[in-house]
Length: 68
Ligand SMILES: [Zn+2]
Image (cartoon, rainbow, N blue to C red):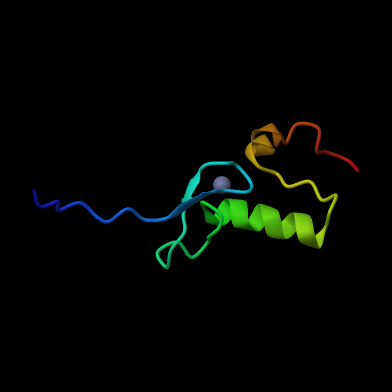
């Protein structure tokens, strides 16, 4: 039987989020699954204790941002 599917691409577990990440030329963020995870990793290396705003951006409220 002829298979028209793509050949099994090698995948790795993203070091950041653990998702399957394509490990090939198609994934320029390898071994990460996405640009975000790559940036997170780079950020951790650059500034170890830097807190990266991920989904917590939602907490950005401009209520108490008056006088400083
Ligand atoms: Zn990831």
